[in-house]
Amino acid sequence: MKVAAIKVAIQGELGSFSHEAAERMLPRCTVVPCARSAEVFDRVENGSVAAAVIPIENSLAGTVAEHADLLVEREVFIQGEFLLRIVHNVIAAPDVKFSALRRAFSHPVALDQCRDFFRHNPKIEPVPFYDTAGSVKHVVAHRFADAAGIAGRHAALEYSGKILQAGIEDDKRNFTRFFLMHKSSASTAGKKGTAASARRYQRLIPRGANKTSIAFKVKNVPGALFKSLSVFALRDISLSKIESRPMRGRPWEYVFYVDFLRGDDEPARNALRHLGEVAEFVRVLGIYPAA
Image 1 (cartoon, rainbow, N blue to C red):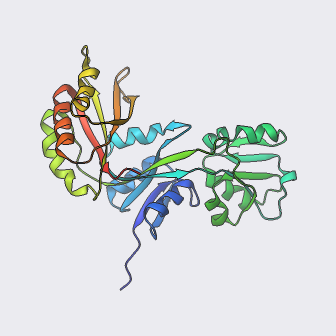
Image 2 (image 1 turned 30 degrees about the horizontal axis):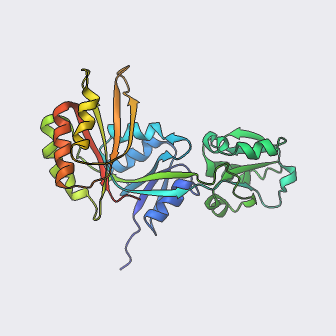
Image 3 (image 1 turned 135 degrees about the horizontal axis):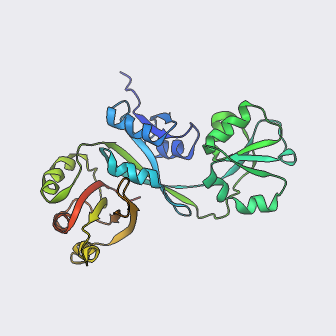
């Protein structure tokens, strides 16, 4: 009997970098494109897809703020991460020549990562577009003779576009970190919720998990952040990332996002329990194998 392919939601069009990351993380999956990031999370929560793959951080552009916020707001759990090398290509409709180009469509972040290309080709105007792969879909569908999209090689394959120039990104060490997430009701919040929630999310932790992502809010008292971070230092737990984000609807209040290099072991559990005693709330966003 043939087994149905797992459905995985992404934000953006087919042929996008998220599409490529999804297929690399879950080979033979069926990718479900979504116009908005909120729709991706909606689909995971309502069960219309089994999982989702979202970009969370780019090595040049930084954190994808909307996705960081949604990870805290929604009932999802991170089960994996993947680092994708980002290669930008000039892709046009068949028969279009590079010398004829006067416009290049792409997502604003992608355009910003190709500044040298536009400096060396001043006749080509960068035009912001909603999606990298969507820009290729747009120029090929309309058969523009003077325009191209800037996107990954997957987009050229998906929409039968022609790569006129490959690898135009300024920095060849350009990577995006993607998260694989599933539905979860296992939020970890407050002093009383930490231990009970930990038992609920243990069934979601994949084998070989050695990295944890959390979000927490400190109390507005002197030394609160120091006390929060000391729970990791006291147990020799290494933090690979720490970042603060403003809380929506609560001006001048902030959530701290931390990645630390431990899985679901006793030192990590003790650190989270201790953190729950000194922070206003703690949420475990995921426990997964490091990329």
